[in-house]
Image (cartoon, rainbow, N blue to C red):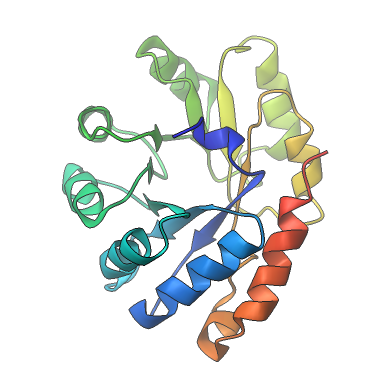
Length: 205
């Protein structure tokens, strides 16, 4: 797989309540130009959703988000997740993600956390929660002292603020939940989701 942060400017952050929606949702996102899909482990159907997308939408790069424990790593990779995303990083979780054998974006919110992971050779990170933690200005300030670290900021980002993040040299992509609102998923309005994905795919400056 190519570098995760280079595959698409926006990684949809998906919360699913019904596994039956997983495949049509993934197909809509891929058709719109966003092949990287983060299914968060926040609902009971998340692992089944990952399993279905991995089996039925091979052109999608499906991963698991909200990974918080070594058990989550094992369950997600066992379901077919091709990458992992965590909201924060503990020593035990980092060890499990390294051993998991798939790319991962461990969550950080400070320079110290980013430096600690860079010492371990991990230089592609999730910056979370992006807006509350300082947003574009904070990430811009990190680009000088940490030029070898790249981020996927997630948390509070919108279509109007995403371009400013994507213009930063240390941002490869952003995570966005605006692409798959529960109302559209529940209504089965996958045509609208495809349109939102197409608009997001065009955001990179």
